Length: 89
Image (cartoon, rainbow, N blue to C red; front, top):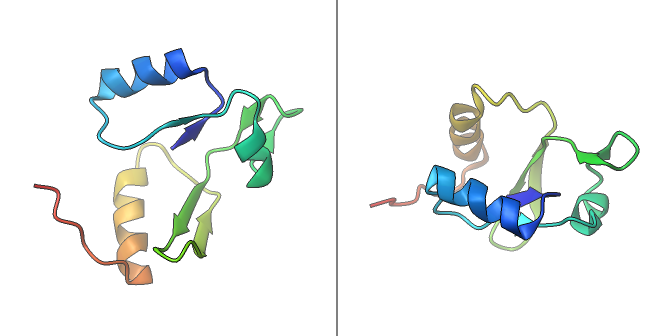
């Protein structure tokens, strides 16, 4: 996950969710610009999910992210793209 928020805000966010995944703090928007997701006069990044395989190839870009359904949407898209299931135990 990449956010334009500061390192401190990202740390608070990750702790509030007990997140078990990495968060990248990108306050200057360097990564967001490189991926073409900066919006609103470059002040915000649009919610976009990139599905990147183990070779670093972008397999799919979802620009229509719904916060309410995204978990299930991601699981279905990973299956559709043939990504292997991960044991989360």
